[in-house]
Amino acid sequence: MDVIHLLVVELSRFQFALTALYHFMFVPLTLGLTFILAAMETAYVITGKEIYKDMTQFWGKLFGINFAIGVATGLTMEFEFGTNWSMYSRFFGDIFGTPLAIEGLMAFFMESTFIGLMFFGWDRLSRGAHLAVTYIVALGSNISALWILVANACMNMPAGAHFDPETMRLTSTSFVALVFNPDAQAKAVHTSVAGFVTASMFVMGISAFYLLRKQHREFAARSFRMAALFGIISTIAVITLGDVLGRLDYEHQPTKVAAMEGLWETSKPPYEPWILFGIPNDKKQTNYLEVGVPFVLTPLLTHDFKTPILGIKELQIQAGPKIESGIQAVSALKRYSENHQQTDLDIFKTHQKDMGYGFLASQYAPDQDVTKIKSEHIPTIVKKTKSDIYPNVFVTFWAFRIMVFLAIYFFIVFAMASYVSLRREIEKHRIFLKIISWSIPLPFIASEFGWITAEVGRQPWTIFEILPTVISSSTHSSGYMIFSLIGFLLLYSIFIAAELFLMFKFARLGPQIHQEQTSSLQTIFTYQKG
Amino acid sequence: MSIFLRFIGLGLILVIALLVAVFVGDQGPWYFAWLIGTTMIVLISVAGTVLFDTQSDNHNSTGEF
Image (cartoon, rainbow over all chains, first blue to last red; front, side, top):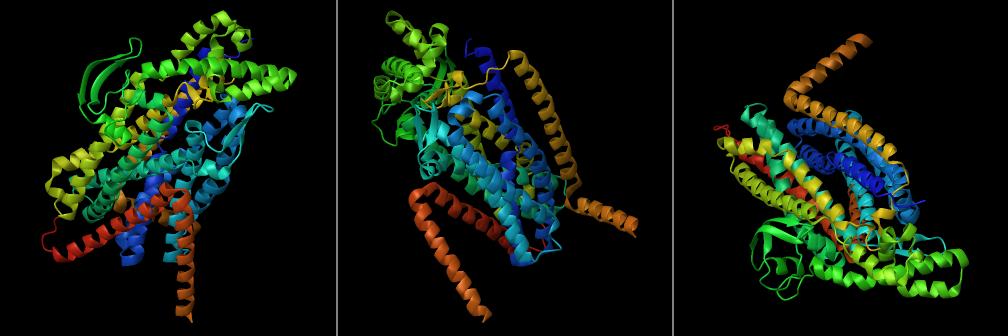
């Protein structure tokens, strides 16, 4: 029986991408809005003005809607690792399970428990204590994301892990190395501040909507000011960390960088242009209609003017010996698992660093078993495997560009918004207010494309250069996958529809009207009790 | 007495902050940058809205934002 079913692998990938992208429509707002709420409540505690309490409560209500629905979308993903990616979970579970468990036990429980106090503790806690609770919720939500990103970083840049040929699993060697993995650090901060940008645009956009309608002007102008300042610094941080991640990818994932930059040939420093527009063709390994800015790519990635960046064609050539070595590693490993001969273990250890390439080649081996590859067929297998060592360039290239172009747009919008707000001229620029209102979805789109860049760019690996995606999935039938995929699609679409309905409803009601409604609800409850 | 206890409390926070700064700053510079940066973002945002109040007091007659 074949282990690799490419259709099932593709359906598993599609299902995970779908659920992850749906889930990540909720996450950035949670990450950012909690700290904006903390800032608003800090202003309330410092100044004692009730308007800041109103702001915290109103934006907190929108946060609550987002959090409640967002949590539901995240739970299914953790189960998917077991149901759809059982080979991956078996291989990587010892590493991946730890941060996932800490995320659940420490961060998520902390966040969820204190959210109750945040919403219902206004009249039961002192101002200082309530402020501390709000900060704990903010920290909890961001630490929650941190642990997921620690796990994800280990998939991109394995650290603190060692392959054990006895158990055929990756085992943890250093928890500190796992947590302080440079990729985890940069990715956690990049994701967190991207959430700040999303929440800032969300608050600023709804505030702009009120200002355009001349509603809740005091409330909206203050919220606008806070969000604009929050957003401009966060955007600078998100761009800085994006550069750090690009540099890390350049050092550790050259295939991802080559795909992101549409680089088929190795670059010629310092002239090499940064491609603004182009249509990469994966089959012909070329770009059409290329428009670039010369002298930008080399310093952007390498931070100097003389280091060449490897193109995909050269990376394919370099992969040849790795694939051959990997086939030897996996063959020796298989023999060792059957006979436990020291010689096989020694051969495996000699070629261990290329093991992943052997796994990748196994899809082209007779019966998907590399031990059955005859020596005269190795060049053919190597040639076929070479075509798989890099990701889909068109998708990675454009996902990266959309994210980058949007980040530049955010910088301009937040800089202008901060300027006009500090000059108290927001209401004079009605077209700008309209642009901001319509910009609310853009940071969500940027976040989604950021994840597409990171995850598609890592292909064909689930764990970079160690475990290929083709042998990571479960052995379900394609019918099961299509059935569950349709189920997730329908369920998650309902979640999104519910989120949008509630968000629009409460945003349109606004803070004062909503308070009146709350008061009338309280009156009803009081009347019923009385 | 309460001033003394507050002084001791703030001193403890300072020591913990320094320990975190030394350890996290050495092991995880970007985590440390996040801690400092997020605090800074929150404080600048709060300063911006406090400035808004001051501007409101000075420009009360215009009513423009």
